Length: 286
Image 1: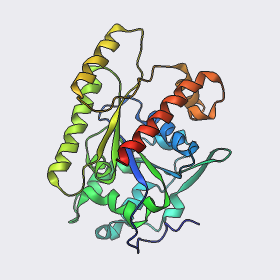
Image 2: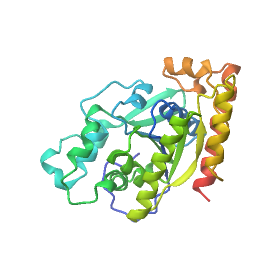
Image 3: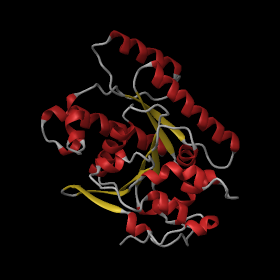
Image 4: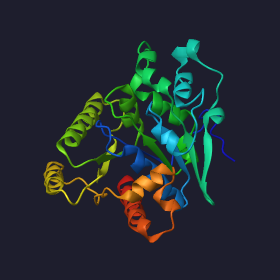
């Protein structure tokens, strides 16, 4: 039985890995990638926790979880002693949602809500390290020791939420659409990673690779843009491009992962996500 409702009182080395999907540019498929990646890990028998850190709560919606009065924002605020006046009586077990995606496949979720949009303003006056609130929250409740993988869906911004995610994660995957706007979003988020490294307040997350998404093989410009972006990424891992398939649209409309469909038309997408988990595991344990 899980014991993560008690604050950390041991010195046990954490085992689980924290993975974030990030891009400052919206509309690149971050949430879709995070949702299906979490399912890929779960299908391999991993204990998976998903953290929705985007105020839009699209990640939460994909799990068919309705908006609640309390969510991850309240837990984070409760974890900061200096904000005692803003604490609520909500506990972790009140917020955690255990979702049964299909028979034998369970994924836990800490949902998001609109209050997250005010996170930066809420914590602006504290004396402690505002950048480490999420990291300390994960440590306090021993979430790494309770889960094999924690998947975080981040917001398409460059604010304090993003900094908290980057400071808390072991590695980052960067979904992008092969165009110049998305390329700039990648550059912007990479600059934030560099800034964190310069602050030297925590270890810098590993670059787990770039995920070309919504790739239209019929457009010559798309191929040209993808080639150009790959050249700017140096030796970093670039995954096989996800084409703009109707299968993604069908699965999202039904709030299901590609693994919840048995037809052969989903086999290729399933293969891509499984291969991604293998690469991520290799990178995080190297």
